[in-house]
Amino acid sequence: MAETKAKKENFTPDELLVRLCEEIAYDRKAENILRLDLKEYSAVSDYFLLCTATSTPHVGALAERIRREVLEKMNIKPFRMDGTAESCWMIVDYGNVMIHIMTEEKRQEYQLETLWNDVPAVDAVKRIEAQLRKKAAELKKTAASEAKAAEKKTTAKKTAAKKTTVKKTAAAKKPAAKKTTAKKTTAKKPAAKKTAE
Image (cartoon, rainbow, N blue to C red; front, side, top):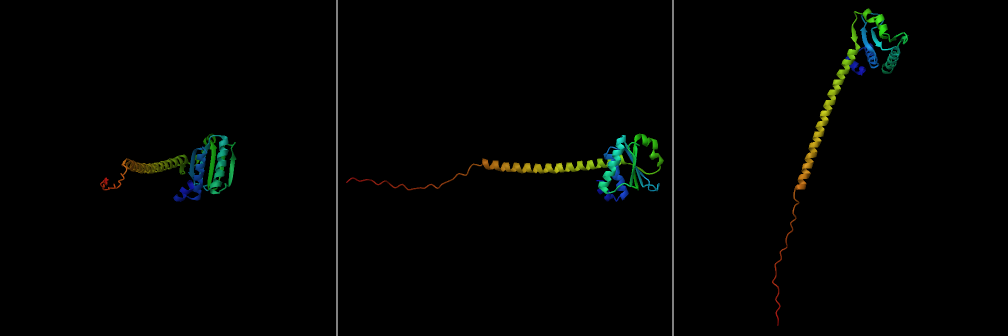
């Protein structure tokens, strides 16, 4: 989904990667997903993706899911994965894209958003939900036009069926053509009289 649309919009490979990671995190119920664009601010990474896990096991599950789906869809392995689920903070490091997965407590404690307060940030949840609403509207519009076309087709079939029925009924109501046979007219010959001799 993101890949085909992204090609149309000419995203860089790093932008494709970070968008895919946002979508995976969203699909796996991460909260408060925020992308920080650090290209002009940091030599460490071009993008930080911050997301909140709802529990300690969720931290590990999100990190593993991101690693696995990025490998499947883009054939990219992370350089490393730091932290553990028990530490409540894991980093999936792709070099130019770093995914930080934290519990709410760790995110409040370290407040990476405020550390990079002046960098451009994108609320990934809003972006994804807007994209989903747009897609749903397009699907609804397509479904409505398909339903309308199907209705027209059905109406046309019903009209054709009515015309056929009317023709058959009219043909059935017409009286059968009378067969006329030519009457043979025979001239009556007078009966021969018998004469008695």
